[in-house]
Length: 185
Image (cartoon, rainbow, N blue to C red):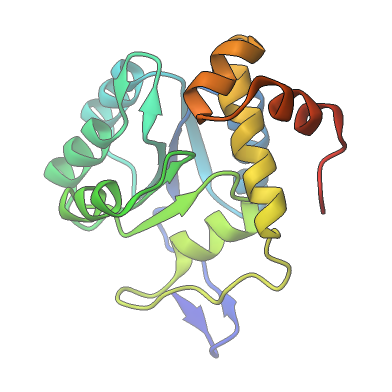
């Protein structure tokens, strides 16, 4: 998939399925991947993703692990069963070693922590088998990753500060101070 070692060449089958329940992220990533040459199908649920895999298994997939109606790893497993040559990556805001290992065992070729940008996703999809993509030139700072995680949990708790603080095992006032500040760079 590499041309002279620098710019990736799109394969003949550039079909890509993106499954994520965060609609704005899903649409932005879909547009970004279309601009890079993929033929994109979008799904917001595990059920929708499974239906698309059954109907027409894509060559590539980007799947969020935790979805409103279940686990995105079910889509990865179905895709791997339907098309063993497919390259699939898992996106998650809840990364840990055991879920990374499980996703790879089920057929994922890579595992990225959210928030991942379109360049990181593209590099992971296009990396030659057995090779890791280059690390990003401008990775997020640890403070920014922490802030993004707190924001995600806050949104998942319907912006309830007390519930978010409980789930993050943090004092409520500390959380309020963090939420009042701007995002770190």
